[in-house]
Image 1: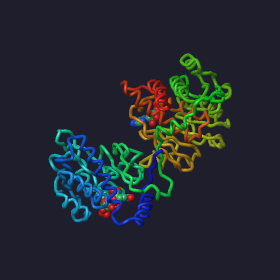
Image 2: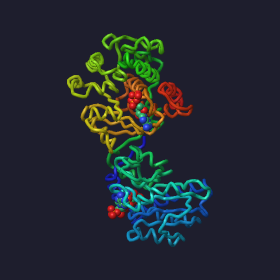
Image 3: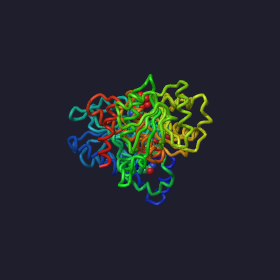
Image 4: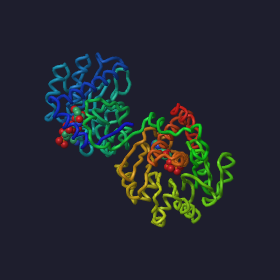
Length: 483
Ligand SMILES: NC(=O)C1=CN([C@@H]2O[C@H](COP(=O)(O)OP(=O)(O)OC[C@H]3O[C@@H](n4cnc5c(N)ncnc54)[C@H](OP(=O)(O)O)[C@@H]3O)[C@@H](O)[C@H]2O)[C@@H](O)CC1
Ligand SMILES: Nc1ncnc2c1ncn2[C@@H]1O[C@H](COP(=O)(O)OP(=O)(O)O)[C@@H](O)[C@H]1O
């Protein structure tokens, strides 16, 4: 698991660490790590010696890191120029180090540049980028290096222009190939549109993590976590002990949702899938191992329910929703079931002790919460989770999972290839299977989003993606993950 901390927590830890170390140690550690990463990048594209390096230098310590790293590259023979955004306010010792190493300053963007270091602003940023910085950032994609290729952009700590604590991108912002960050990840590296701007994120250890005493703001699962958490059948397992998942999905209007949620559920760890709804004939034809009924009340025993994908919002759908909420089992509500909650008609049904998981996309989130997730997606998901006392999985490029207690996870595996009808139904089925297998709701949601994202990526290798492709890719993805 990787973890990301908010700026205030990073600052507090930095203060603690600085009180234990000689002045300037942290900046030297940060700059040395940054220079090393830049040298590696240049090694892969013609070498450090003779490379043209442009430093974009703001007025704070982020600029200081950049100047020291530039000095290190200049000592290795790179031609380093620093464009000072506020020449009257610059890290003076950093500038002196650059000059002593043979680097110089420039007033304009050069014609040629192999590598750009974005040190305009780091975690001290407030608001959108200001005038000269914004114009320079806009021009960066035009810069060409010695091979005629676009200049590589390395963001120092965070890409300038992103909101570090929320991952929002309120205006002009740097798009980096690599972001070299110091001490720990910050939310902008893992959530929201900022995460996409970071490119590859490289963490330089400056000794900060041992003094980070607060809980992380965001957690990110890794492949090894999935392998450790995924339930496997044992010698004494049978189909019931592995868990039975019930699906109250699909309708005459949307039979496809029933099929897709079934495909997702069948790839999960549960031992049996029961389907209850009007698409039961289609489901059993496509998936002979699914046990079908026409209503929730007739479905037989299950350990968790998935309700809502393609269910419709009429009276029959309401009845089915009431039936699943009346159980003392974990329930996942997706799509139409979320819409049915709007207006408060099910407020009493929602007063239950068993776990509840909601899987809204932005539109469903807005319907339920009364406002769109907005700039702080993780915060919005956590507020809805607290309000509904449910685990909320907010779909999107970096799907967020939030608990009522404020624990937040960001999924790193998503792909825009998933932005196609029906992939959410596959996700709901898979997540339901994990719930039925007995996984705690937050873990089930994190695991389902992770595997679903990988399946989207794998399906995309063969061309344009449809939801059945994503469902088909779940099994090979799991085979790779679980060894
Ligand atoms: N934390 C750590 O452990 C370590 C941190 N380290 C490094 O320090 C960095 C933080 O440095 P920092 O605190 O000096 O802030 P920083 O990001 O340079 O920005 C502040 C300056 O930018 C300006 N400015 C603000 N907003 C702006 C905008 N929208 N558009 C344009 N300008 C804007 C603002 O100007 P002002 O608002 O004062 O006019 C102020 O002068 C951190 O990211 C990392 O690189 C490492 O060296 C070692 C370990
Ligand atoms: N731009 C995107 N990048 C990554 N994933 C996306 C993107 N757009 C949608 N997704 C994912 O695709 C799925 C779509 O689900 P949903 O909106 O419920 O679709 P449907 O209701 O048609 O099944 C979700 O898992 C979501 O996270």
